[in-house]
Amino acid sequence: MGFIMYLIVGGIIGWLAGLILGRDVPGGIIGNIIAGIIGAWLGGLLLGDWGPDLAGIAIIPALIGAIILVFLLSLIMKSMRKKS
Image: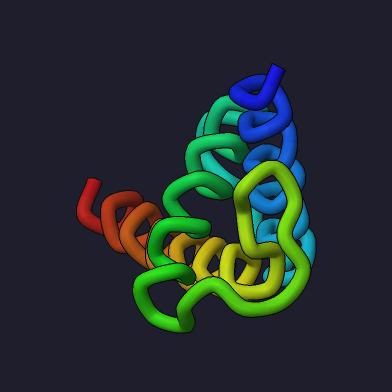
């Protein structure tokens, strides 16, 4: 059950990061989950594990990490579209 909650929280964090930036995460729901989980890892590395915790994910650092990740992904996708 913990793994499913981890995926749900990761998906919500990825979705929120996309909403905050006003950009879609490539890959839909799966992309949101991946962005949320990688964002949680990135946020944990950069900011530590402070703030509220849900399903083993520190929410604030995870959200900040996911925002950074979604922003970088959107820049990469934008540059790839210009080249083709």
